[in-house]
Image (cartoon, rainbow, N blue to C red; front, side, top):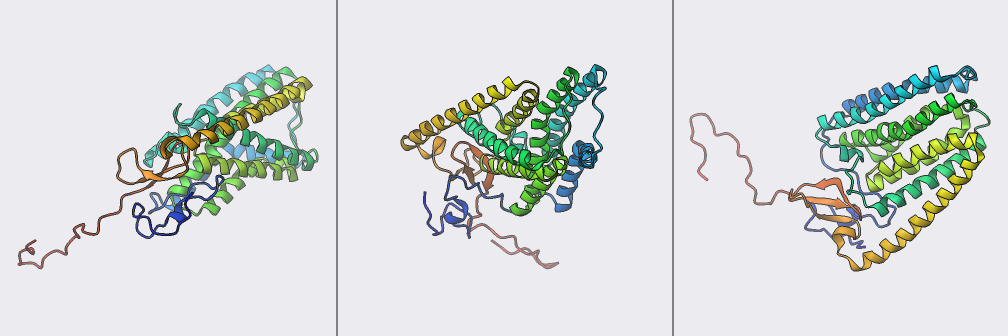
Length: 346
């Protein structure tokens, strides 16, 4: 991959190839450039209000649990589980609709939130993302287990509570990855906030409702950082939603039946092997294909016909777009002619 610093005539004035082309496979595309399309005040207002609506109760509950005031689950029955499951389904629907509608008001689409249409993301890419996500969850879970020191929610051995827990686990992948990851990142990017600031805000919000783990929240911080990197790198959250929801559901089941834990280990091993094989195949294919379609990341003419340059991440087109630079001979707006005099002849 080129590392030249010479000016590229295809790029906007003052931009060099080294400034926009990542040197390594782990380097995410640069953040969007140009003027902010929303104010910082509006961006933070939307982020905090949406986060508070979906996670305010979770933060309060986590704080009580951290203080040792856990809910008595011994009497949890079907009269609690069924309404709770219905509420989780409704919340899942809302956590999709609300962010999508808000970004559409700002001129974006669901795809900008990482909710890409089928076929936009290559299956091999999605599987490799899933493998990275599972690896992050395994490592983060190990840290959480080592540091939590029992500061977590108690498990109740009742079918009713287990059923409600499964709905909570399935919902977690949707609500966390859409609201706390994609919506936070995309909204603050529209306000052109620095990427370190975006990462800090996203991680603090993610950890805030996991404080019932005590120091075990450090593990949450680790896998959440990995999920952030995956979103910056590939700009999709669908594999992350699948991994997160499946992981939570399987962990709940494994706490009840040890055999499920064995199936989880086998599934993780199969995922890693599949991801590695697909990586080898894609690496081999890259040597015989053209840059557009499966080639190296870079800036290429926008296939949408805007006349600018769009970032290709090696697998799919991203929302990052450099608009076409105005030609040096473009006419300049002239000052209005003094009153009583005709405009200058061109």
